[in-house]
Structures are given as C-alpha cells and as structure tokens.
Image (cartoon, rainbow, N blue to C red; front, side, top):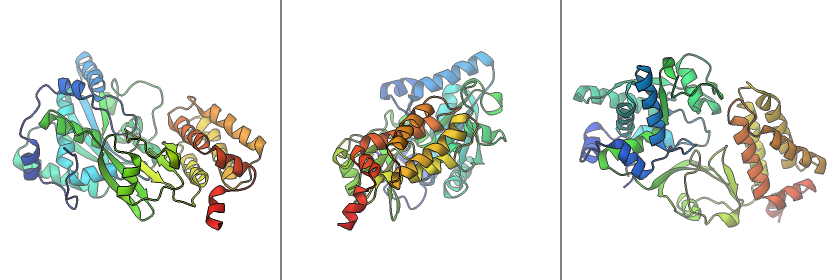
Length: 379
C-alpha cells in the first residue's frame, strides 16, 4: 500500500479516487487511529488521535464548532513532498480533512498552501466533489504566506486571521482558541492524506515520503519505513560521501559511516546529501545564515542569538574561528535552547550542535585553519 500513485504527472481525479479508496470506509476512526498509532508528518511527529480528542473536548465544552486546517505551507526550502501530495492525491487530503472534521465537530475546513499547482489541484478537486454531490464540511482554500516559520501551526492560524505569519509562542493552545477564536486542529497535508487512506482501508501504508535534495533538483520518494538510508540515496542517485542532513534545515546530521541506519519519521522528510569534496560545515553555515534571516525577531534569542550564531558558524566554515571562538559557539548554542518565543531558535541550535557532534574531526581541522573536504578535492 502506498499514498502516492505510480503516475504523478496529473492529479488523481474523483472517479479514480473513489475506485481506489471507497471500498471499505472505516466508521470507528478513533479506534483505527489508536491501533495504527498514526503520527503527524509535518515535523513534530505527534500522535494524531490525542490531538483530535483535545479539539473534540474543547468543541463539546464550548459549544462552538471547530475548524480543521490542512497545512500545505511547506516553508522548508528543500521540501517538495507536500506539494507533491496536493498535486497528485488532493481527494485523499480532502477525505482526511473531512474525517478529522467529523471527529472533532468542525464545520469548516481550510486548505492553506502556496499559490500554484498544489492549491490549483485542490480547487479542481473541490469543483469535482461539488458537481458529484460528495457530502462533507464547508471547505475553503487560502494562499499561504512565504517564509520558513510560516508553516508552523500557530503562524498558519495567524495568517488565516489576517495577521503576520508569526508563531504564537507559548500562549493559549490552538485546540482552545484558533481560527476565529474557535477550537482548531492544524494538520500537515500528508498527515491528512494518510488519515483519508485510513478511513477507506482501515489501515495506513507503512511508508515515509522523503524529498531527496539533489544538485539537479528535488526528488520525492515514497519508501517503506525501515529502508536503509543507503538504499534511499542509491535510488535517488545521490552522492553522500560527505554525509547527510536528515530532516531539513531543522534536522540532524549523519556521517558517511552512519548511512546504513533505517529511515524513520524525519522531521520535514528531507534528505540533503553532501557530496564527496563538499564540506558539511560550509553547508551548515549557509543554512544557519538562512535560518537567522528567517527569524521573525519577536524574542531575544532570535533577534540577537541567531545572527551571532550564524556569524560564528560562518567563521568556522571559513577556517577563521580560533579555539576561543569555538568555545563561544558552544556557549551560544546553550543560550538558544528552550528560550525563544517559538521553537525556531531552539531547533536551529540543535541542527548546528548536530553538525559539531557528527563532524568533530572537521571542526578540529577548521579550528587549525584547514578544511578536510577541500584537501580531498585538491588531492
């Protein structure tokens, strides 16, 4: 069983979708969710069932109808899995959103994604469903804001309410007060596609969607959970002689010798191979500077800590950071942990810390003014 069809050149239309996914609708969805342990595929990998139950509890206690937001913002710059889901199986996403709405007591669904093929595919799917009289909640579409943090759940809600797409921080949970002050659940579009699959088949595919970021462009693969990372890289034709960033810009690093590990849920589902002769510390410096620019600067760690972190990592990548600077780099990482208004500085610091841990020999060489990767190229 797989989420994506073999032919991804066009969206699966309604007739094809119903033929594939209408055979045995699951009526006791919560039981199926608990049994399968479906987890979100937007990065945090939280279990879906408890989140739906929290929103349902709030709806029941408040007397207000809830809202389901299908999050296809995909702010991660290397990821293409969500737009691939929207452009190929939009009806599966809409089925999952309708199922979530039925569980929590939501009267409205909002599909939020970047302007372009993904949102257009959803709008065509909605027109097909209206023409065929498919029942379900009211579904609206919204063009997403740009930017890395714009895909965070509370940032999506802020954008839908007409505010800047900034994460809310540690305030009132969305399950209590989200879109329009109503109990709201925000789920990634891949998660909802899997929920739609579960409603039809009573089970979900034991697969993971990955975007392999290649020099020639991104390639989206659907592979079984537990597939060795080496096999994923081979299928994509990737050179990972310099290591791999797993999970995207807020992911973690793997050394070349660690690439036999099995694939699990990996943050944004991004695999960024580092080619032989390419320096992982240089890659880390570039992504850290990007993350610093993408800060919304609503707290001290993002306003001051992130730019300083980027400066230090860039100096390390240029082989101009001495031992005192390396010590400051470690101190700065410690200052960013669990102190921001949102998870952006904390997650960014973990990515940098992962690079330092994965490549200690390279860090030491750079501290001495030499880059092992460049020496390999020169040789």
